[in-house]
Image (tube, rainbow, N blue to C red; front, side, top):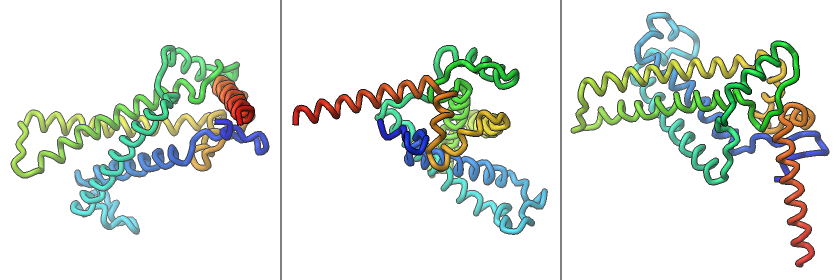
Amino acid sequence: MAAKIDEKNKKVLRHPATVRLIHWTITVSTFLLIFTGFGQMPVYKRYMVDQVPGLAWSSDFSVTLIIHYLAAIALVFAAVFHVVYHGLRRDFHILPRRGDLRESYLIIKALLTKCKEPPCHKYLAEQRIAYLFIASSLALIIVTGIFKVIKNFPGVHFSEGLLYWMTMLHNLGTFLVIFGVVAHLAAFVFRENRALLPGMFTGKVDLDYIKHRHCLWYEELCREKILELKEGSDEGKVA
């Protein structure tokens, strides 16, 4: 834990490599799913998207279907790995907490009025809410998508009513994800949030920024560092 704080370079490790890999796998696979999903309607030939250099394949149903399935496999793998990885590590910082709605209101109010923000943990309250929204929407897409794949298996028959609702919910999940991603990216309109962007590429953010805006998490890291140093000292005495 002590390695999270790099006093020399004034950086804090916010996202290790594994977390960044999961994040970008989910991001890329979700984008591909949305793009190829719309391509199967089809709309890309009608609006001449397939005339754009490099996108001639976008109106080919067989190609978009294969990419759609491959992206779906990547998304399911990354989502399951994400849950297992953080569950085993008991890292639940991103999960919503009681009072997040009120805290989100106070943070947004502070951004608009330039007043003082409430002290924050590793993730801002609105980030935890956004995580729940996007994760729930992706879960809806995954579950309904599995039904849509199974229906193509030989000997499998679902009622027309079930297939109708699975399709409607799948489409709903898609638009919810699009809305959630747009809202998530819109948060970076505020300059105060942009300092977090490097963390999704390098994993590290400025130490001074963490001390100022995520002071509760910084205090937690300091306690962990002190505890680790104490344990190391005790082991040295025993040796």
